[in-house]
Amino acid sequence: MQWNTGIYQEYFYLVIIKINKNTMLKPFLPIFVISLLVACVPARRFEEVSTQHKECADELTTTKSLALNLETENNELKESTSRMKHQVELLTSDTTLLGKSLRIKEKQYDKIDVLNQRIQDQLLALQGQSALENQKLVSDLEKTRIELQRKEDELRITASELDRKKIDLEKLSADLKSREERVIELEEIIANKDDILKSLKDKVAKALLGFKDKGLTIEEKNGKVYISMEAKLLFASGKTSIDANGKEALIELAKVLQEQEELEVLVEGHTDSDKMKASAHPKDNWELSVLRATSVVKLMLNNSTINPSTISAAGRSEFLPMDPDDKAKNRRIEIILIPKLDELFEIISK
Image 1 (cartoon, rainbow, N blue to C red):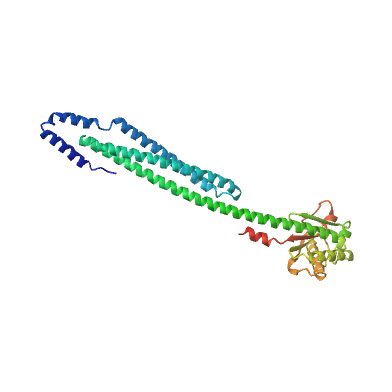
Image 2: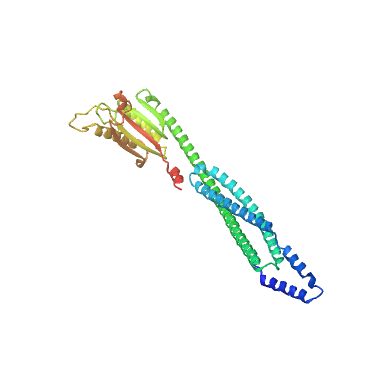
């Protein structure tokens, strides 16, 4: 706010002229001038204003530093979903502090406004001061007004930042809730798959109970069920046709698997490290392992209603031994039961 100092100067001069013309008041003219000069604002008042200004500048620096810290904390919120709860708590705390800071700044602004009004009131009392001093006071007042305007701008920026932080907090809270729901859903699906695998393992073990001591093992690991049959249970040495005992075990297994629609079945053939020297097929361990796995798949499909699209055969030759020191264990058929995880992948990909 600017004051028209010219009006007060003219008023001051008119008063002096009138007193000068009035013979009765003329003796009091020096007293009147001195009184006006005495009414001027003391230098200490301006020092207090300057101190107030410096405090405002310090507070502004603190506010900027706080804003920078808040921005850094906001960037850190994006680092990891696992830390999101903790970051939301920090952001909530920071938002509360920022709100308190805003209210403190508003109170300080009110105090500065009151001080500004006092300065303006005192300016009215400086009508008799010299033009140079009056001009200096007006300049100081303008600086105060500019500083006040700057503080108002800072307060508006702080309020805007606070609103943005609140919006970010709400968004992060909603995102966290969505992630928690997805985690719960994933845990339920995984638990359900684990229950299915355990139940399936029990059914397979029950169906193949009579072959337990004939080179057959059943193991659950890595979310899959591994059924391992030593070659002696299924095949004659170097042959790919399945003998009677092996057929019985595979048919019992196929009856269990045909009821499991949510499974992928992988049949792997494995051999020992002994090299084959046959001139006819199979000529080497690769052919032997593939042909044996294929024979198992065909037998299971011919004696069950297993969907052919869910079962496959693979040869591993000698390169995945179960026990390097036991060739009998390495000559085997492994039937791997893999649960379909389409539902799980669909949730993860959201």
